[in-house]
Image (cartoon, rainbow, N blue to C red; front, side):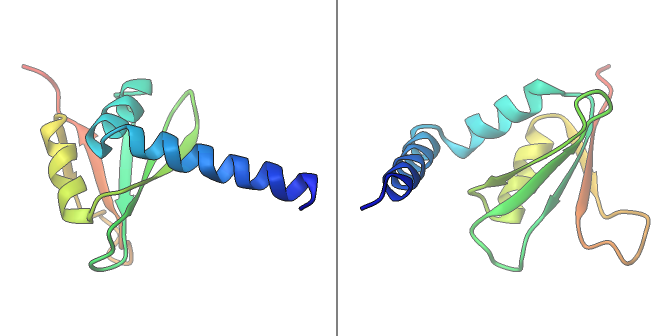
Length: 104
C-alpha cells in the first residue's frame, strides 16, 4: 500500500469517526453558531437520507456541509433554531431558503 493510500484511508476514517461522534442536531447548531444571522439554504434529492445545507455568509462567505438528515427533518430543525424557511421567490429554484426570525 502506498503512502498516499494510507493517508487517504486515515483521512476517511477520521472523517467517519468525527461525523458519528456528534448528533446531526449538534452539527447543525455548531454550524449556525458560526454565523447565525446569515441566510441558509437547504437542498436534497427526494427521500434522500442526507441534505446539503449552505450558509450565504456576508463576512465569512459561502460554506456548505452535508447533513445526515432528510430534508423534512432538517427543515424542522432549522425552524427549531429560530429560522423561517420557504421556497425562493424564483420559481426555478429547488432549494429552501431560511432566515433567522428577529427575537421579540
